[in-house]
Image (cartoon, rainbow, N blue to C red; front, top):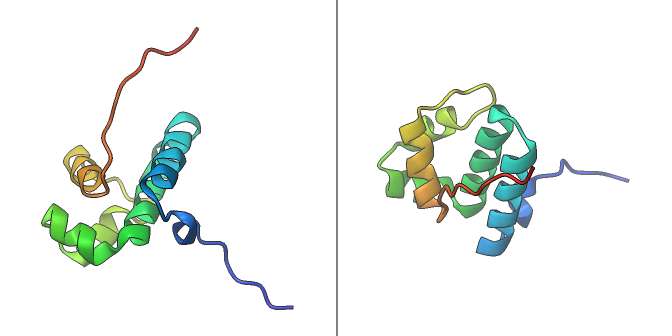
Length: 94
């Protein structure tokens, strides 16, 4: 039996799935997890499309969203806008 590597990007096929995935990572993950999640969403949508919408080159986009990367906040905001997301702050329940 042959197996293949699980790729979350293969399952991010709607705005609702993307939002649920990213919100889950934002709630439970660390900085690296969030950057990785944004990269997976960009792959699901298409790096070429995201690169065009952000004004970044594809190689720069891949580098900014790769494991261990520490992209600038402005880059994250550009990519979030390109993937159709936004940051919203809600009060934490105590």
